[in-house]
Image 1 (cartoon, helix red, strand yellow):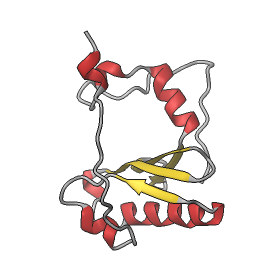
Image 2 (cartoon, rainbow, N blue to C red):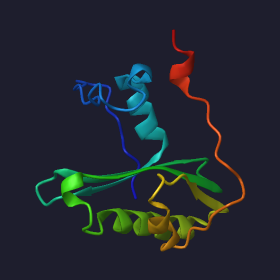
Image 3 (tube, rainbow, N blue to C red):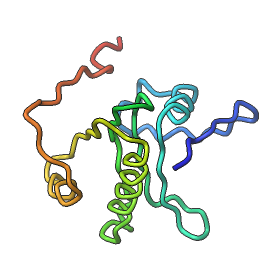
Length: 134
């Protein structure tokens, strides 16, 4: 796994379309910072086309939180998601993690249970930034 690097020279607008979740809070600089500070795993076709993306937020020592696992709808069911998660877990085991956490979309829990994740007694609570944007 390699950290994504951002380039401040000749920025190309690669920012997601307005239909993306939390769009009102996003901008190119914040997207670049998120990519630079997290761990990013991608799956690409031979021609470089992105078909899978996984993002991990971490303190780079003990705790790793998988916040995104996305596979293009046309490539779902071809083990891209499980391959990315397994590759990440192999690397995190090598690093010696204390915890790897994630929040599964309802209905996808079985996907993660098959890879060894276990339910916890702690619920996930959240503040949504867009609730505070005027």
